[in-house]
Image (tube, rainbow, N blue to C red):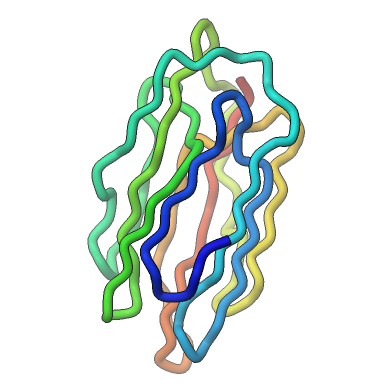
Length: 151
């Protein structure tokens, strides 16, 4: 679980992809506390290697990121600022002898300042994200859409 207004990083162990994402919004801090959990059971996929992206967004700008080369998104780092937005890096792991397929983008999985709660369907992994910053009553929050795929 993350802390409000702090930098943080999270990554799942090898072969245990992200399974649940919960993020609760705290209006006084204009921030979310994130609780990301990994699959309890290993998937039958060997990953050749994993690598972190650079920061993929600028403050207050659209964030669009997809792991290249059939990578699976298994972790994230967040850098906070005093302007109530975040910059993100993502960890991509690359499966040996598997390709991501039947990919689709979800609708936005949260509304402004409302609890975000998403459980990945069985046999689906996270490949990428889209996020845009929105304001309500001068309070910023990011809306999130996920690119989920089968392996």
